[in-house]
Length: 274
Length: 274
Image 1 (spheres, one colour):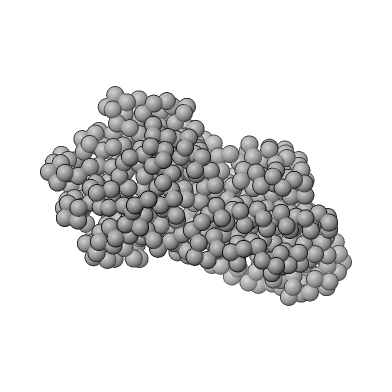
Image 2 (tube, chains in turn red, green; image 1 turned 30 degrees about the vertical axis):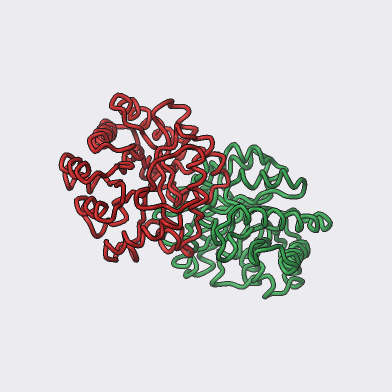
């Protein structure tokens, strides 16, 4: 399998969160020949959605996804505020032409130990959001997060679990698979096959470092860790995924401290071996 | 459901790893009325297995398990050294009358990204060890570790995965479930039911802190985190588990720095709400 050229990559803005605005990320992608971008909403709103949409179009970039909707458990119930925020996320995703809206579903509500209740809230919130997203024609992608985030970020933690939800909710909902979150799963190959083209909406790459020094902000650049990225990419492509490979690296002590053009150069070089 | 009295508890020596020898842990359990002990092999060997067995017997303690056999991937192949070390672990477990030998199976071999190979090594190593353990009559308990340890400690990361291995290997092998490792799993209830009395060999308790500041040594005392321990204990008991509740807390910055008798006092108090 040939490695990835920049024409197969997308830059998730989290990778340069500390260095660049969305406008700078867009220009940087264009300068480095990176085909797509995956903005986070904070950077999108900072730039302004219309202005961002224009700049993305002008620079000929694809949008591999918008991060993030979700966080359904934040208030312990699916309040109007939660519903509205997710509708806005759907609208923003549509306005920038995103391939999907990526959902980080939320963990346990504050003070709660009731995981089953959190699961129920998440499914209720997804269902409500999906109703609207279908009207708009925006695919909703559940991102199963690594189980170490079950308490405080997302209580959907395996591909199987995400696909079970998708099957209960019907069309227009699928998964965003990030190798960081799913690489360890002994069922990964089987679940990717199960997902198939119809449920594989996004694919994120980075690496798992050994040791990992922080649960949130110590992700590795591709090649610096233990994840067999070509293998997993082979699985999603065999299942029919044809989207971009979005690079999302939270790295407070390393990549966020480097020159952003150097980060993009290394990212492209490393992707060549993915 | 009534909370746990000290007569339902076992002290895993890791909880006082920084403070006490095994001899001191044994005396401490006796002094606090804690029914059992779960030694780690380093402390066991430091004391001497015969001497430890005698002290445990003299003090009337049960041994809820010996930590740990396994580490099958350490040399990238099931070498004689790996086999021998696991045979010694079985013998030591038998000599102290342990309810089971707890297996931390090992992660990826150094420099490897081949998770499937690691899985195969683990199953081969377990099969070889099980042959011997059956002769000795020592139950072998696979401990599925949290997925955040897949690379460097254990590539068996869910109860389902562990039980799949058990079913392939037959009798005399089961699981050691630690709430820390499995609490997040949406399949946990179903898999505990599947395990049943015949495969549930050990049950460990502690808590998941939010935030968790270190991947290895920031476990919480029961009640300080988000795990619904009474719920999970109810599941294992409904499935037929009647063993002790072993308290295993890796806590470099908190419990390992406290007076050990205070730790045991708090542990007993907190178990009353588990």
